[in-house]
Image (tube, rainbow, N blue to C red; front, top):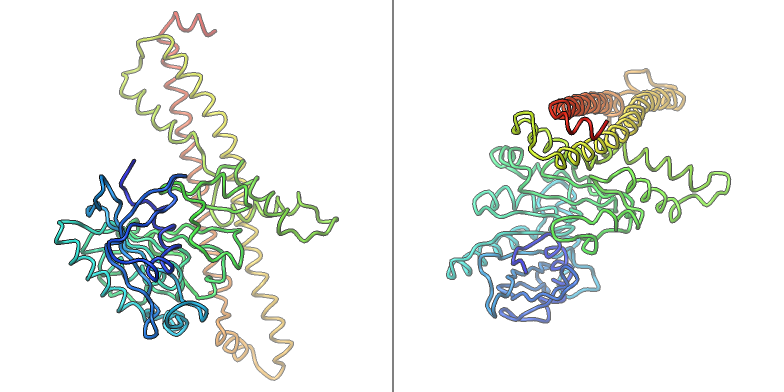
Amino acid sequence: MSNEITTEVLAKAIDTTKETVQSKNIDDPIRLNVGNEQREYQIINKVASDEDSQLNAMAIAPIVNGKPDYNNVAVVYAGTNTHKETGANGYVTASGALAGGLSGEYEGAQAFLNETQVKIAKHNGSITDVAGFSQSGGYMMKMAAEHGKKMGFQTTSFDDWGRDQFGTLTDDQLKWLKSNPEMLRRYQNDSWANLSGRDHTYGTVSRIEGIGFNGHNTLAKYFDGDTLNLDRLAKDGIFAPGMTKAQVELAAKNWAKKNGDKKFWTGDDAEAKSRVKEYLKLYGAYKILDLSELKKLRKKLKSSGGGLSKNEEIYLDNSEALLAVTTASQTMKDGLIDVITIYQDAITEAKEVWTEGLQHARSIGTELNDSEIIDALASVGATEASIVTEPTTFYEEQIAKAKQLGESFDSLASEIKAGIDKLVQSDKELSSQLF
């Protein structure tokens, strides 16, 4: 059994934090269902919300041979307290994040982190992971750049809340985050937390689509260790990065069944196809499972000097590689055509939206000239730059990337095929067996 603190552990620990810190004491054991088995952790430190604070947090370590493993300590922060929960109402502190600043609980959160660090230092331990959800997920960006940078821990946020939290960072902190995006993992659901104006750029962002407006949670039931179970998500009609074409189509089909307009003339199939296009527009392409194997084979062919010693091995390599090339090429072709078409349509749509919006504004503001109308639209955030120029630039970049990906894949496939042909031609016995 691994002692590592995984994303699954973090999500499930957060889900139990509010109840645990109110009912358990420091040094008490707790159990988490991880990997379909009960695992024991010890509470190393905790803070519970009271009438003066809404902060609920705990530090835990896996119990190994009856003792806490101080080399794998996780610090987790629960989400916002509601008026029905023990302690201060958390909406006041959350308002600071909504305005683009830090949550009012950040000061207490970093004090708890430092207190925990001092405590485990006595055991030569270290904090390996820090995670937060909702309001606390929002200030994980600051936590990573201010403290993770120095302490070296991995930071994870689940469905973070807060407008443009990158604005809370110093120039040096922002520079560090841009250079080390893997140190801040962000899982963002398409829930009401999107209304907080959060960015989708900084750190390593995984956008989860299809969970719904009320699906504000840690995704705990979908994690297997550090990995999201994409099959499980697809069965629930939910999109995530890195899905194969089959997974995307299954997710789209199941989403349409649950969320379709229920009109017989539309049909689930049409809605599912439309949903697939939404996936490609957001994520860019399907995952090609065989691409990594093709790269491995290329390295193998190069290192072999042009030949393998056993006919059986060569035959298997040929069979597997040709199957992979055929399958991956077709999948890539289908995906890239759809992606490019979707982005081209989006460019056209953006231009139409601006033109129609401007015409509508002119019909309403008959006493204003064009300059005044454009200024009025800009005052509410509607500018040609935001509606047309910026999205068009983004879509054109994605189209270029898609075409480049296709060219790279073709080149890789051609190189491998050439290597395979060379190997077969160099072995007359194998050639006679195969042909």
